Amino acid sequence: MRRRFPWLSYLVVVAGALFTVVPFLDMVMTSFKGPGEAGTLPYRFLPKAFALSNYRAAMDQLNLPVLFRNSVVVTTVITLSVLLTSSLAGYALARLRFPGRDLVFRLVLATMMVPPFLFLIPRFLILVHWPLAGGNDLLGRGGAGLTVSIAALAVPFLVNGFGIFLTRQFMLSLPDEVLEAARIDGAGEFTVWWRIVVPQTKPVLVTLGLLTFVDAWNEYIWALLVSTANPDLMTLPVGVQLLRDHVDPARTMPVVMAGLVLSVLPVLVLFLLLQKHYIRGVMLSGLK
Amino acid sequence: MVNVLTPQTPERAPGPPPGAPAGHGRRRGRHRETVAAYLFLAPALLFFAVFLLLPLGFALLLSLSHWTGFDLGAIEPVGPDNFAALFAGGSTFLVPVLTNTLLFALGTVALALTGSVTVATCVDRLRFQGLWRTLYFLPIVTTVVAVGNVWKYIYEPGGLANGVLNALGLGSVAFLQDPDTALPSVVVVQAWASLGSAILVLTAGLKSIPASYHEAAALDGAGPGTVFWRITLPLLRPSLLFVCVTQFLTGLQSFALITVMTRGGPGDATDVAALEMYRRAFEYGDWGTASAAAFVLFAVVLVVTLAQLWVFRRAGEDA
Image (cartoon, rainbow over all chains, first blue to last red; front, top):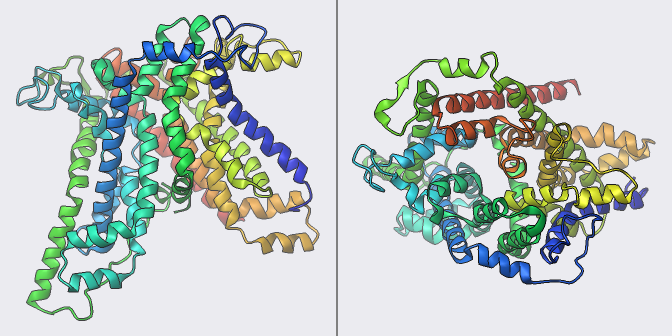
């Protein structure tokens, strides 16, 4: 069976791959097209000449330094926080004995089951009414709360139930002897965690970090919500979408495509460099 | 994530080390371990309290209240009125919004599942598997803004899709402008975007099927079709269940892609529940019915998920 229809398998896989890749190529090709070349009939895939002017126009219209800074800061903070909190909580749940452990673990599992959209409204209102921030009084009235601060972009994503679960599963398999040896030598739990457990769980932390980074970089709805209240907090996806909304699509589509290429490039490069870890993460989440 | 489907009780932690001091000292050690554990858990628990439990309670309160302003003192409890308003005659929530949501989710699951099963079984027989998987994976690591805009452009009258149709001698289609084709067009994009992870999960499932099963069946004279339907698919059930449930969940909740591509239009042809909730809240400032809509969608998500688990379990018993 395995060798019977290799040509048929090749046909299916290559056709499927074309279906996946061609939209990306279309995006790149369009970003190099000149005025009047895009969106007109008859359709042409390749640009007449590879013009860089669209990239210059996208950069001019896109306040790139601010968008890029916001995206990088928020993504970095979220990734570091998820790694730290997942590894701390995962260690307690996997290797420590304490009353209430089963309950906390069930809570972690439960957080993964509640759909994110349910939190959209209340979280936003809680940030608006955050006491003593952004001009609010002690009861959270009067000002804009945390929604005017860059913290608002990161806050809902700082802890991730799936991250805790993933690190816990990994830490269950660490050998007892090393941890016990360190404890007998007088190491406190914090030292055991930082000196022994964190280095031993590096592979899963790299995987989790990459998954978190890609998700945070691509997040759109929450960033849109927060930056509607304060345009200084726009991230790259929100900025590019705004550019799309404010240009005449027929004439400046190539500029939008150039902006899109700029916004996906960092994560695409990261993925191509570290895809082994990312793919492992997705497989892990499906196999557990 | 699949752990959600098969919640497991945590394994017992190892007891105290063999040489541990007994009695008072041991109790002290136990106490210290408890303090340490809760210190390690403190950041996560604090976060869950403030950004999960509190919002959940707040959302429930809002869904049972009337509140348009930003003054917390003006929240006015109205009981189940908001829910009643969603289902009242003349409300568009049930039809077309919820039906669109279900059609969207069903469509993406059907497309992504057939596509990923086909590709995964084919890739399994080829060389350069890593290369193929990388290619199929590109959409997943790309922002929804890029995916949505590229496809919106592909569907334009002068875009790639109509370019291909015209080259084949077919007429143009107004994909996103025509109410009849708008929803299917967005479904294709959502399925396209989720194909990669589905293929990965199914590949992992395929790899765990021992080759000897296929060889034994082939020796008994089973053709490739029989082997696929009788051996591969049944043994792939856990992976299929995972893909099915997660894609359905994502499908029921999606609205970022629709926001980018159609904003629910033309008319309300692609309006879905989460988008409707977002609009009611952040465009009309109607937090009450918006929160009620969120809970209705949550209920739909739960029911659909439980139904799928039940169906798959039944299928397992019959096999």
